[in-house]
Length: 101
Image 1: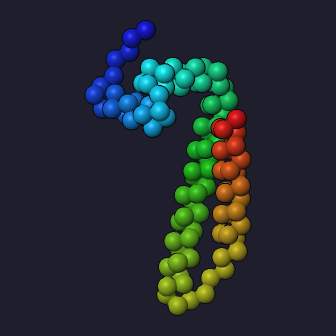
Image 2: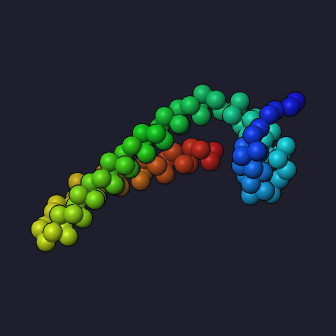
Image 3: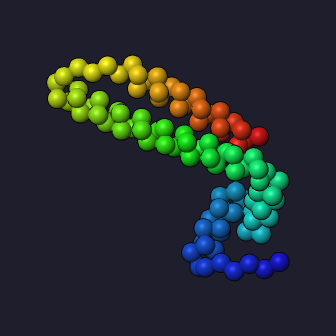
């Protein structure tokens, strides 16, 4: 089997293979087979990770707003944001466990 890669794509592939301690061919084969074996699960995880990324972005915005208020010398109720951080962290950890399986 032959595939065409740009120089930049080849460099990315080579770095990933080196980081894994295997040849480019071996790394690419394992990735392709993993995608084929987990396609439906992979798609579900991608959607879930996108949702977690959105939640984390919203939490980051809330934290910035809280910091702005606190830096202005006012007080702020951070309990809601901290609960959201805990929920998003738990969800992200759960997804990462699924990915590792």
